[in-house]
Length: 86
Image (cartoon, rainbow, N blue to C red; front, side):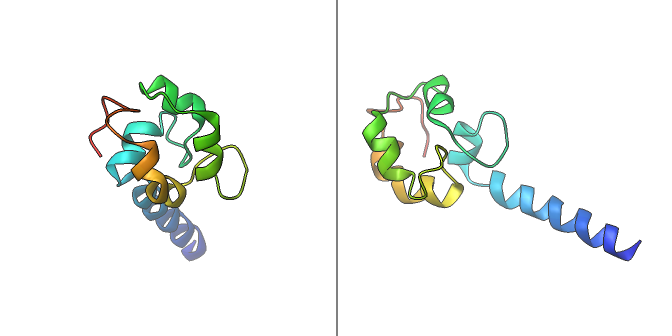
C-alpha cells in the first residue's frame, strides 16, 4: 500500500513539473509532456521543419520541456508564434 501511495505521489508531482511552465501549457495540447510540430502548428505557430529538428536534440519527433525551453529563443518567438506569451 505504501508503494502505491509513493508511486501515485511521484506521478502527481511529475505531472505538475511538466505542466508548470507557460510554454508547455501553451503548446502541449494533449498534455502528455511532449510538444510535436503539429501541436505547435495547431497553437498558431509557423515553424520550419529544420528549426524543429534543431530543437529536437534526441531526434524522436517531439520536444521535451527541456528541449522546448532551450529552443524558445528561436521556436517561441512573437514572429513565429504570434499568440505566444513566453
